[in-house]
Length: 143
Image 1 (cartoon, rainbow, N blue to C red):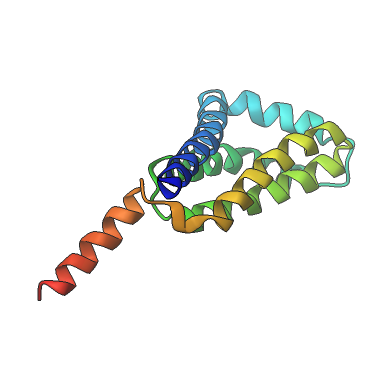
Image 2: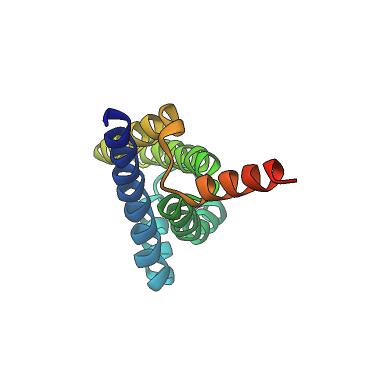
């Protein structure tokens, strides 16, 4: 019974993290030019070149949306969590350049949740990854 609760807890946390990232990316994608302009303004006083901020401002919403969606549905879950954690570290670095120390707290909360999910990855039974693995195992056993 306890293992079942752990699997449900994993699912709830995985979906919450994934939805947070997916919606962050989706909202930003819906107003991409405005988001990029905001980023350029936030980083104009930093040593980061405009081309880098512009490129990251274009790529970030796509990454957030795609990585978040993979996490929600549980496809390539471990890889998506690692990609998501890496993306959050880049965001933390950007927050330091912009001297936006309060941003780091929010990124750290996501990162703690992602690390917890990575640590308990064997509980990911409610996922497409689990279905693919079990379907493949059944087919091999039936040969």
